[in-house]
Amino acid sequence: MLVITLLCGAIGFLSPENRGALLTLMILLFVFMGGLAGYWSTRFFKMFNQNDWLKNAIATAVLYPSFAFAVFFVINMFLTFEGSSGAIPFSTIVTLLLLWICCSAPLVMIGAFLGIKKKSIKNPGKINVVPSSIPKQPWYLELKLLCVVAGVLPFGYFTSLKNF
Image (cartoon, rainbow, N blue to C red; front, side, top):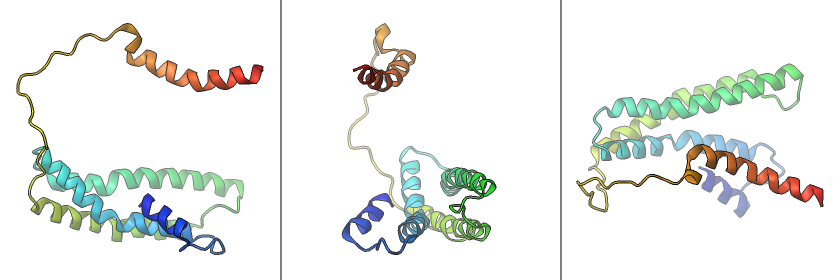
């Protein structure tokens, strides 16, 4: 979805004069890519020898879009309470909800149905049946320390530049 949107913008299909064209294209692509999402999620689900493909398809249709919609709704609610002109009208939110329920979710189910009919994807390499032992990591490779260092490095760099 993102690649197609960026290509359309780079080629010049989207005019800067039409202010909402890029956002409209992104929303429509997100809705219509639901078929591909259902297809590939089911194919990968089947690759791991799982059987309950319908539960996977429902999770694909509901989990990520509901999270994105909830974040969008909360941000829009704050914009509405502040009286911002950037707030989206309630009728548009209902339209987005209907697009999700009536278009994207059925497309995910159709894609999942088509994906379960295909052969399972085989791994390209062989898996060793004998598990290999993983040696204990040194203290400086522990996850907690790496998280702290990764968070401190960017801020420490900018702070040191500020002193010059």
